[in-house]
Image (cartoon, rainbow, N blue to C red; front, top):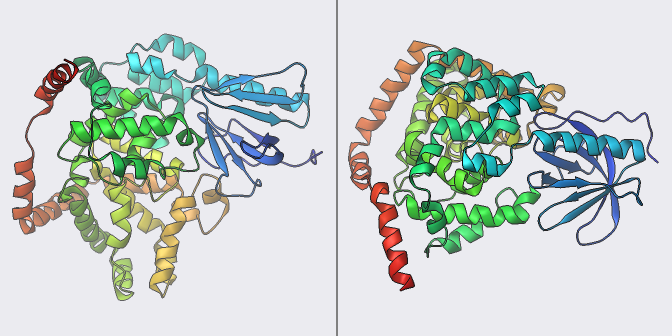
Length: 463
């Protein structure tokens, strides 16, 4: 029996609904092990101890049903599509707390089918939640886009605080305009995901190592991720398939059905500037890296000179930050907030003030370093930074996402900042004129006739 005075710590990631110790039955070795659990709006994470930074595993609550067994009063069961998880609480009262907490989360979770159909009863959802942030976002979703754009400051203030995890899928579909593409091309995804693809071997290799700690991607999520990547690589020939895309796709799949994920991914690539990050000459990635170096030199000159004296090139860090939209170089809670802002602000330029804010927050720490390896190790901490340790552990404090966003918007809201960004972009474009001309020659409209061509090929193939 555990000490009843043990005080569970708050969630390590976004928002903690409930936390505490339970026994968990192993999947392969059928023994019971004590673990510390943290329930959030979309996941149930478990840790070896309550002081661990990285979870031992993460159970995604999509399509999970909590169950009780009268003959086993201390037991709690989570029934998934292909697996049954078994837990044992300290007593019946504690089990009931877990059951009610999970049931409450599941009650408000938007079913993936409702997002898929784009038939969302906002009024009903408002009645189901008492959460102020959720009500405000539902009100935004229920407002015509033209009216929302007139109240951009209100939308931006909400985005700074983060989109509630329970509503991310709906917000992403809504603000990317993915639902419009889906309605116009209702057959496309189902055809593309089964079409032969030369990239399948590369996709297969990367799928198995994308977010390995999240249990969802050990099962049905793995197949769904594979299907979306295959479909997208055929649909967007300019990008096809490159490393980095699986992390973005997997993040979207945590909030969306595979088909909605495909269309949101398509919109992010084509309308939000993400495509140029992954293009053959990576012009978008290289441009962001170039501009950031200019920003660092202008706004943090002392730090820039110090880093330069240690032979540190910002490209060493920003190539992974920008190349994966922070998804492979930071924790899920951190990178999801970045993705929220990218979608609401409408493009990848938001990564520039965010990155500058990270360096500013780390200013004194970085100035104290005298070796290149110390700098690299410092930025590696971003992978483990979360809401809890950035508040209570001094070495993680500079990676507190709320503080970073506050600083980032101080830059974001300055006209001079964006004038400097634009002038730096022009310098980059002038210096890389020939490569950019080559890249532009590769861009041509083909999506409009792609569906017709594939349908014709499928019909001929089946004759």
